[in-house]
Image (cartoon, rainbow, N blue to C red; front, top):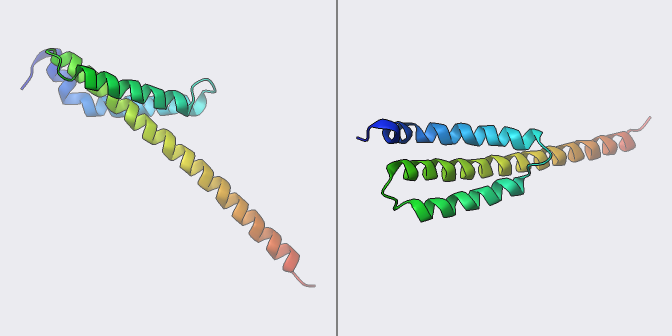
Length: 109
């Protein structure tokens, strides 16, 4: 088992990646400057950085790159889920509006 900062990072890397992804998802949700495309580009950069550095002699570097790549990929999943949910809600509203119009126009006195 690793000791020191590297061991600490390795032991907590999944939790750290998840919290970073959640924070980034909230920033994207409430910010108009950071978009889903920014998150996707950061995920690509994160994966390329991880692939380039995974053979590093430093376990701290390997753990930090893993956390960065994992958090960005999780953030991409959150952003895509938010996009799907948004369109599902829009579709549900349209379906309900059409159903309401059909009901109103088909009502006989």
